[in-house]
Image (cartoon, rainbow, N blue to C red; front, top):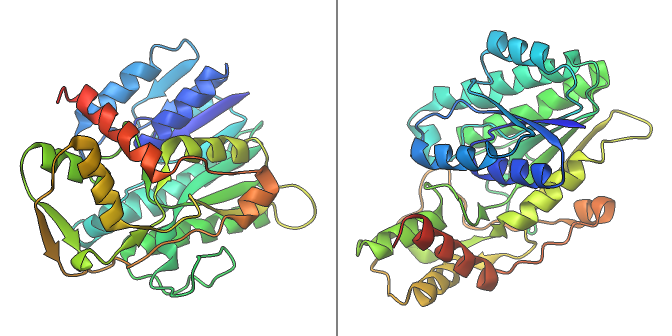
Length: 324
């Protein structure tokens, strides 16, 4: 089988490609390698992937339908699409909204058309987000909950992607599955995420900024658990009667205190953080908590990495990669 993975130089995309290559699959990677965060980190991930003979890479913006058409023409043997390319981050959507509509809406549409026209495509999996739940107060968040009141543009674009996928599954019979990710962290993580920001600042002797006075909880999910779920879902397209379309939460199924998460970082580093407490940020939510009953039932998904295990692994990677 041949897997096309967009966002291949990104955090989850890199680990997904690496896992697929490790089991002997052919992987076509696509990424524009933009400067939303340090491109050097993306290039370092790519260098590892390019050591594999089964990996082919295209430096392309998925919203460029002509360029993606050329990729499709060269790789008509693609059987699975894992669309992880996206403009991420709630706060940045307040600053650069058009980056979100281009990547998360236009780019997602291009990939749906890509899937529609590939003769051997069996399944398209794509990244959604726990942000679609907005200010939902029912916990844990379940895929059956209404998500029609987003509180950030980022969330709105991710919900739009889910609706577009349903449309293509209904009209053209393309099997699609959306995965609502919950606060993913781990080695090779994104520099705009809390784990990376906190470790970097503490090692530099700089203060960390903690929102809502520290009264926050997140369903922190370790990257290895996420990738196991992504690959398992990709290999099991929707089947049976009705529209071949599914949505799943993919998280750790535990809501952890942000202050406890910070405490584990401090303990692992052997240093205390100087904390500046800030008010809640626009578009942010106080707590996330994933109901994973559906993906557990259908794929046996069972996250196994607690933050007590995952935080030290991230810190160890950070110190090794940045020689600190």
